[in-house]
Length: 384
View 1: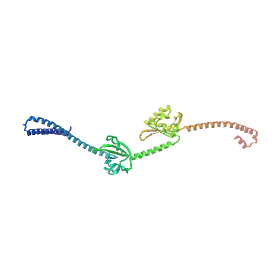
View 2: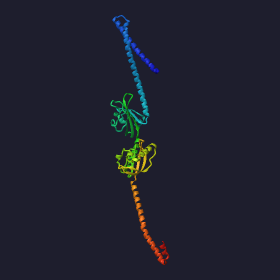
View 3: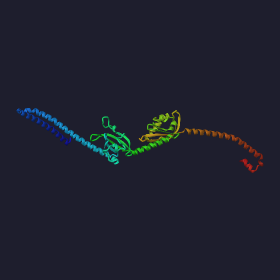
């Protein structure tokens, strides 16, 4: 216990005793004066009862007095604490890199604005929040969160977080609103608004990029693209995947890769390879594979894989499958053509060999019979 507290206790005890003595003296004096006025003789024993009552009543009055003083002290301390809390709160709010204001929830009057907000919109304190913070408002905003900041009993409820485009500032704001008690006893609204304009621009560019990506792969024939989340559930399934595997996008959405197009003999290894890529960063090598269509038929593809992180930082696996059926068909046709050509060459060479032998024999006969009549050029032609 501090020295100041001990002094306070001594003072409280003294007040109780003084009040008791004063009341007792007053009652004893009153009784004595009454007896004198009636001409009764002075008897000391007659003063015991008034003195006892006086002491008891005095003690009660003293205790009430002490209690009142304690209440006054607590009230003063509470006001001092509230003032200190308000000063501390304002110090914190003024250091935030955000637009901050406090408004009366009943009148919508701004009772505090931090320097960043005052720098942007001027001195808004004492004015209506809807008239100074918003553009072209003639009354409280339709989107005002005040009704949701208190419960049915009028007590502060949970914090509300919402995004809003402020036309007066021409900025996107992420608003965090909460009802709090103010030092004067009012329940007020505290709003902390972060400028997220650049974040919104980035999000818009990402959406546009994703739309271009989806449009590109949605309309690319014979290149089947599927996207899977970290649990290997389908999140993207383009038209070429529908044509190749036979599943509509709505049928495939949310189903696991291994339960959809992976043959039973490959399922365990596909799961292990995918989890290893997510865990260790070991990519799955591109390869020619025979996967499974909806009808149960084998689907020949050349499959490549890409792992990307989404906006939440979660990995997404994208499979790019090229349909090898046309190539396989072309190769079979080429093999058949090659076999036909080999047979034709064999037959043609056999059919031409006999006439050539006949011509050779005729030339030999011609040379033996008429050799003496032939000049050098004729002999050269026969020998050729």
